Length: 287
Ligand SMILES: [Zn+2]
Image (cartoon, rainbow, N blue to C red):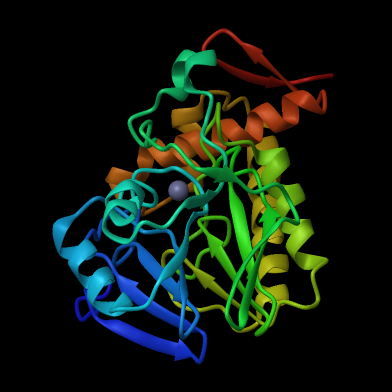
């Protein structure tokens, strides 16, 4: 986490892209959520962020008199979408983007980290676009971190807004049941196979300027984690908490729960490939 984060300032990153940092730093958000304004004469806003009065005032100051054509959300975690209705009330812009989660179909999905009030005016399917003067954003479906995660590609500049799918400061939490490791790995491949992307702007952390090499590194890291889990199972370490202690030496204790969810996500993925099975409180290798 950086101490000198420019919270509330509108910072131009390239002609069509301006960033405003929200004041919600935490072990899960780095210095905070980064909201992006797209366009010059009219705008789209990507990931309006937490419903925080200071952040909304900073966004409205950055928007000025310009019309907002769309409020886009990459996914519905509470640090990304809750400001959407407040920004809508202030600008009249439609909320367009990721789907709401079906929170009522599985108890554990009604997780405290989800924005259950999210209600889009229009859901973008993979490949669908929203455009303004001199800018076109295309939805790139990237489930894994959440089942409804979208990245947005700015066609005119080769920038990809990666939300929490690929971040510039930390690996992504993949927490079942909504988070899905197999889907996440497929969504990493999806980005590796998009040569048109020149730079990533994540919701948390610095811009990523070598995006394809970076994503290959992330995929390799997850493969290493999977290998560690299989070796621990070979040694008879079958409980998630015991695996986290051995795999994440020196981790901030506040992140132990999230690390455990990511280990569980690997185990569920391995189970779906018939490599492991649940047994009692833990897991074992399948013969
Ligand atoms: Zn998230």
